[in-house]
Structures are given as structure tokens and as C-alpha cells.
Image (cartoon, rainbow, N blue to C red):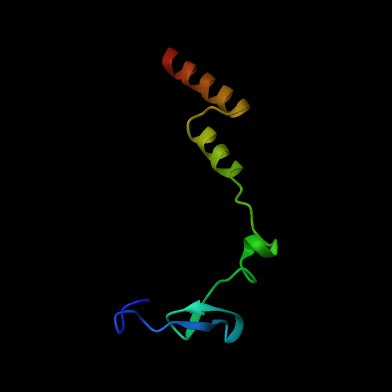
Amino acid sequence: MPKAEIHPTWYPDAKVICNGEVVMTTGSTSPELHVDVWSGNHPFYTGTQKILDTEGRVDRFMRKYGMGGAAAADAGEKKAAEAKA
């Protein structure tokens, strides 16, 4: 048996509220829980998750350091021409 008057009040049917509507009930020490995101509107669970395109980062890196295909060959030729001059 827990000691009296040291534990918070337990609400077994606390309402979880998202965007002004009750989405579920759960046990909590607060009678209402206001949340912005829950499994019903989270992109991972709804299938609307956007996958980040990292290819742009790689291309930018390759261009910046002259490691990409024809651009790298042109840059190498320019550096060789400058070195001779």
C-alpha cells in the first residue's frame, strides 16, 4: 500500500487531445494531455513521410572539390594550363 499524501492523483481515464479533439484515453497524473503529434497524424505512421534527398549534397560536394566527371577533367586541364603559364 503506498504512503498517503505523497503520491500525485492518478487519473486512469485521462483524455489525450490533439487539434481540439479527443484521440484516445490513457492513465496519467494529469486529467487532460494536449499533444501536437500522435500516431494518427505522424508522417511515419500515416505513410506521408518525405524521404530526404541526399544526392544534392553529394553533387554539391563533388562540384566544390572538383571530383565529378567532366567538370573535374575540365578543372584539371585548367590547373595544368595555369601551371605551365
